[in-house]
Image 1: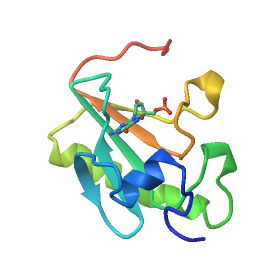
Image 2: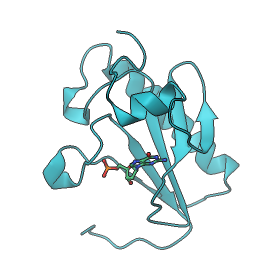
Image 3: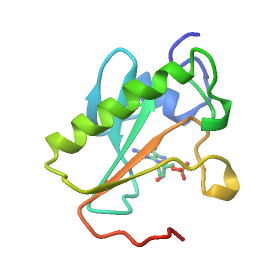
Image 4: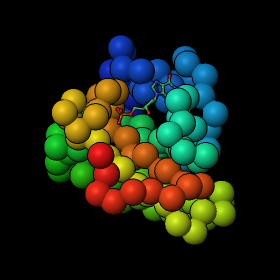
Length: 117
Ligand code: DGP
């Protein structure tokens, strides 16, 4: 499994710094950056650097990447002083996924309806 290996993947290109993004967090396994079209006052995308197209593709070694993503997300939320926030993973086009590199949305800074639309 090589990090950010998919040449055409938008988020792999952000990992490789070929496309600029406002980075919120980075370590050897995880990258987080602010969403270009924010849906809340705070909207950060947390991704594994390794290319996994969608949550339902995560298995074996991929699944081990999810824990670090969640831990990074909580650290980012704390650093941004969010004490209440929503975490979203859209898995598949019908669920709203538009970029096929697994990502967690960290949304905060406003109230959220339940159930989601
Ligand atoms: P989703 O619809 O769950 O696949 O979310 C994809 C998100 O990615 C969407 O909220 C917009 C964001 N996005 C798309 N292109 C870019 C980009 O080039 N830069 C950044 N920072 N975010 C992007």
